[in-house]
Length: 206
Image (tube, rainbow, N blue to C red):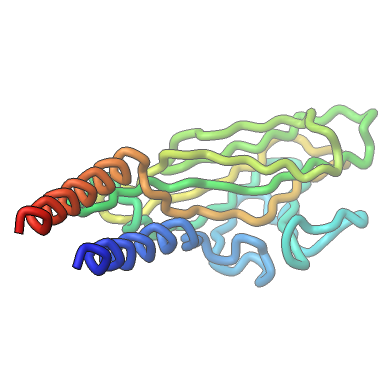
């Protein structure tokens, strides 16, 4: 009897955890469909998709790259019902994890550049990058513990600001994924273990 209960608990918990770890809430994060699902504003002449200067994509066959003289804004409204602002009364509460790959490509390194990449989540700056990383190398960034608004949505915004002057910044493989919070997993595991122990004790006494 007990092995059946243990197996049933695993069948309930494992799909919930695996689903929370595998769903990308960002649409077209690898820019295989041009800028579909993304909202653009500012100096749109500096926003492109595809490839340039023989720089290979991080993922797929395309990426977005920016080389503007004035700011460009790229945003998307993300459905964050799976990582809400206030966790519902459920076994598992989740936060969101933002990840993306970025690359600096400077074709004229001797020329001055003030290009800056600012990443905002619901208007709050979560990352700010300046030209200075190793050129032509994809760097993977990760921001944890993000939550949506009370309405179940959040705005993810990339701002490409400053004077590029012959270089560009490429962005690829943007994702936002719900992740179970460790505390809730511990509580859930402790609770299930307690139930199994009670049942085991009753089975022994019986």
